[in-house]
Length: 122
Image (cartoon, rainbow, N blue to C red; front, top):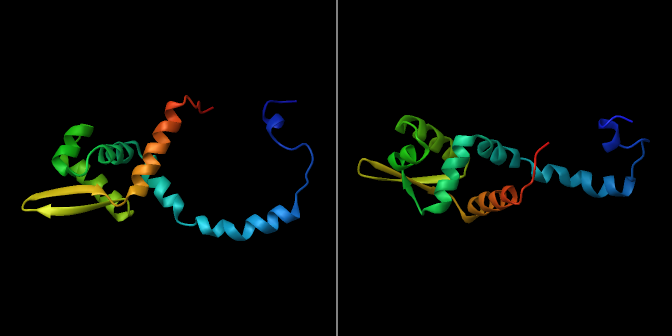
């Protein structure tokens, strides 16, 4: 048996009670993929992680933290804001970003902890 066939059922069967219980709830997850899509970009994830470490950061600080131009940092921060993960405030000529809520902080913290546990992606 090949390696790929070992991780699949050898015969097709299903539990109708389980399907009836779970299938109607599947649509409840709709929209969550946008959150993970936002965080799947390495630059946006680094920015989000930086925002978990500080209450708020100026666009210029973010650019220096991630080693990019302010235009690149601003672009990614704007995307995070548009995706509902960050918020901003303007103070004179400066723009400061922070996480929208504690849920974002928790997600990034949990994902980091999970990665530190040595989970290997095959």
